[in-house]
Amino acid sequence: MPYRNMTLEELARHIGMDAREVRKLADRGRLPGQYIGGEWRFNRAQMLDWLQHEMHFLDVRHLQNLERATADDPDKISVSNLLAPEAIDLALPARSKPSVLRELVKLASRTGLVYDADGLIDALEEREAMYSTALPNGFAFPHPRRPQPYATGEPLICLARVPHGLPFGASDGHLTDLFVFVCSHDPRQHLHVLARLSMLFTSELPDKLREAESPAEALQLVLETESRLLEQRK
Image 1 (cartoon, helix red, strand yellow):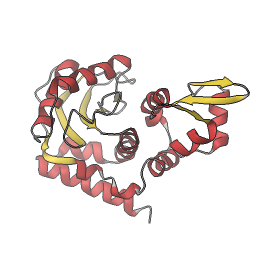
Image 2 (cartoon, rainbow, N blue to C red; image 1 turned 90 degrees about the vertical axis):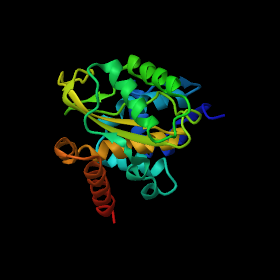
Image 3 (tube, helix red, strand yellow; image 1 turned 135 degrees about the vertical axis):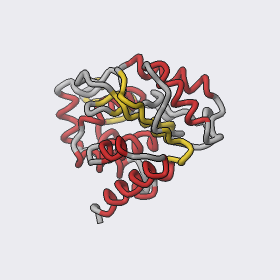
Image 4 (tube, helix red, strand yellow; image 1 turned 135 degrees about the horizontal axis):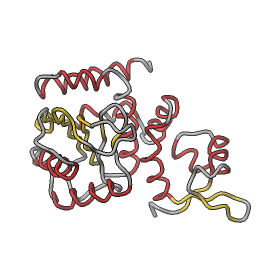
């Protein structure tokens, strides 16, 4: 039962956080849980929603812990390996938020791995209706609210740049010009990839991607940035 309730200790292990920190967040009303019989209980589906919303506000230590908790070997789940050259477009023809989502799914379809394009578009629109995936500094990580194992043949990532940017709902009110579309097949992988992306995009990577002249160069930038990130942990 993938979405059964978790105890406080189970949740702490699930997200790689100290149980005392989890308790403080729950006691302060920052976690979506229920206090039953003197114990906290947390719904897995609600926690997945919470993590997707709050992840980008976590510090590096918490992101690294989340990575470790959501993969048997964190270093083997690579953003670079999920991103194919044909899934990169540095001049995405989009002028509005809805058109970005449609064009991202078209971009994913270039890989030959998309089985349900309409379903993916619907899932992206449902997720954006909850709250925008746009973040400060001009980038966004659009993704379905839940993993989509039947929409694609394999998990995948697409990278797109929209020249001059467009309004996508970022909290700082600025335009968004870099988009990373994430389509995972299970919740743990989904959280792991989002955590890894959050760390990659706190580096100089966004600025370098804005200057990239080809998909091959963009892919190399992602690969080099991820390699350095992993090397720093050794």
